[in-house]
Image 1 (spheres, rainbow, N blue to C red):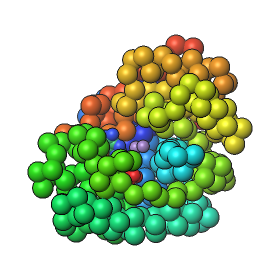
Image 2: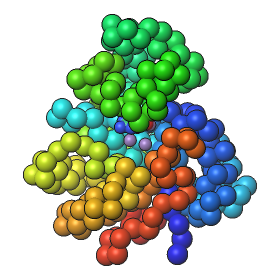
Image 3: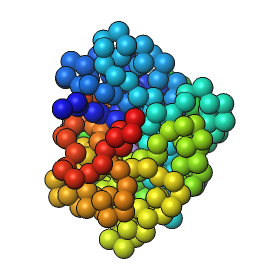
Length: 276
Ligand code: AMP
Ligand code: MN
Ligand code: MN
Ligand code: MN
C-alpha cells in the first residue's frame, strides 16, 4: 500500500526545516507521496518538487489557507493546486499582508502581560515579515522562559482569552475553497477535531464545507485521537466526502507524528487521492 502524507510545513511558513529537508526526511521515513502545505504560502513547492523528483518520491503541490468562520479560525488545505495560478498567488499574498500588523498587536498584548520583545524575536525566527505565525511566537516565548514548550504556550498564551491573542479577520470559507478550486486543487478541511464546535455545529460545518465545493475531510492527523479518527471517519462517510491524511509536521522536536509517519485511513473511506 502506498503511504501518503498530505499536510506538513517548511521554513516558508512556521516549519523549521527547508522544503528539501522536509522531503528528505519524509523519504527517509519510507513515504511514497508527500504534499507540502505551508500556511497561506506556496513558495516552497518548487524546491520540494525538485527534491522529491531527485529522491524518487511523488510530490503534490499544496497550501494551508487560514479562514475565519463564526468565532473560530479554520484551516483549509489545498492539494494539487496550480502554483502558477496568478489569482491564487495574489489572494495568498493578500492574506499574508495582514500578518505583520497582527504580529505587532500580539507582541503588544504580550508586552502588557510583562513579556517584552516578542515581535522582534518572532520575526527573526520567521526570517521574514510576511509569515509570522503564532508558532514563531510560541518558540520565542519558550526561549524567554515564559513556558516550557510550545504546546503549553498555546494553553497560557496566544489563544482566545489569554495574553497574546488578538482577533484577526481571515478570508471566508467559501472564498478559500473557491480559490483552491479555481487553481485546480482539492479543498480539504484540516484537523476538524481542533475546532471547538459541538456535534450539531460540526455537522453544519461539514455540510456547509461540502456545499461550498470542499472535497475531503482530514480524518487522520496528528491532532486527532483514535476516537476522533473514528468520529470524523463516520461524519465524512455520512457527508459523502473523501478523506485525507497528514502529519501536520512542523519541527522534529515539536511534532507527535514525524513527517511521512501517518496512520492509514480507516476502512471504507474514499481517499482524496482516489481520482488523481
Ligand atoms: P497562526 O496561523 O499564526 O494563527 O498560527 C497557527 C499555528 O500555530 C498552527 O499552524 C500551529 O503551527 C500553531 N498552533 C496553534 N495551536 C496550537 C496548539 N494548540 N499547539 C501547538 N501548536 C499550535
Ligand atoms: Mn503551523
Ligand atoms: Mn492547521
Ligand atoms: Mn498545518
